[in-house]
Amino acid sequence: MLPAAIAVCIFAGIVFVALSFTLETQSRRMSDRFTTVISRPPEDDLSTVLRGSWRERLLQPIVERLAGLAARLTPATASKEASLRLDRAGRPYGLTPPLWTLIRLFALLACGALALCIHRFLPIPAQFKGLLCLTVLAAGVLGPSGWLDSQIKQRQMAIRSSLPDVIDLLVVSVEAGLGLDASMQEVISRRRGPLLDEFARVLAEVRVGVRRRKAWQDLAERANITELKVFTAAIIQAEELGASIAQVMRGQAESLRLRRSLSVREVAAVLPIKMLFPLIFFIFPSMFVVILGPGMMHMFTSFSSIGF
Image (cartoon, rainbow, N blue to C red; front, side):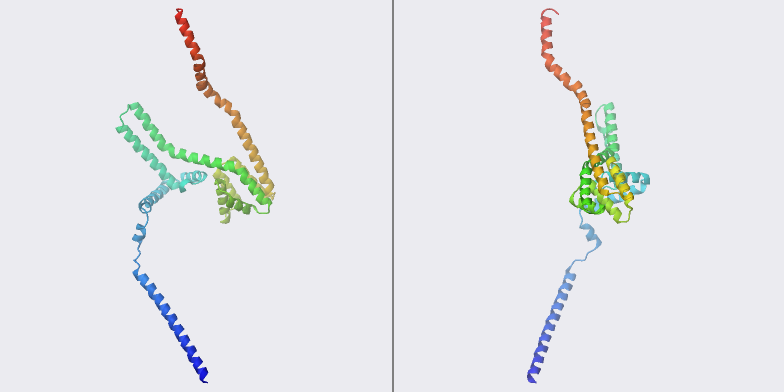
């Protein structure tokens, strides 16, 4: 009886010590947390705003408000056209239609101010001054559009050059047993480029509920490339008729390579005609001067010595 009582007392003591240690540890943790919360300086909206850089605190809000004002003043048709052109250029620097309108307006105002300064303060003749002012104003009006057109052409060239290789990869993936969407996702994960960005956008639109036909048609309209339009039309027709996607894409890849070969031959055939003008106006006169010049000078000297 006595050993059992001793064992119970020892067990009760161990439980009491363990509970005391646990409660003390929790009390210490809560005290530390309370001390940390009290010692932490209060956060307010002003301190959060002041933590950013001067661009985030000053420049970004001004640009956002001006872009919002430009969006309200821009007609819907002009905004839609600007959005389409920016999509064709790949949205360089994350440009949006309101921000693009703001950039064009700023370029026009800056070039107008520069033309006014040239007209008032530059000491040059009046005719040259007017020509220079018109050039500056034309740069302000046409400069942003020209830059965007160059971005569109570069992106279209990149898409056109990578289209046959990407189609070959899609054909290999489809023939390996993957579906069209899975094949596109596999190619997107392995390669980079504007064409793969467009395919990723098509997949994203299909996942959010856009009809597959509409997503492919939007792709063709955004890219505005004849080869890609033909490819998307073939894909849509194959899906509607139940034809083999792999055979259709293989035929499209061969057609694109043939078209590229014909375009290269066309460029090579036009080169002699383009080289004719520099030959006639620049190279041939120089050759005539170098070859016939000394002989003509000798003939003039000989004729002058005999009285001619």
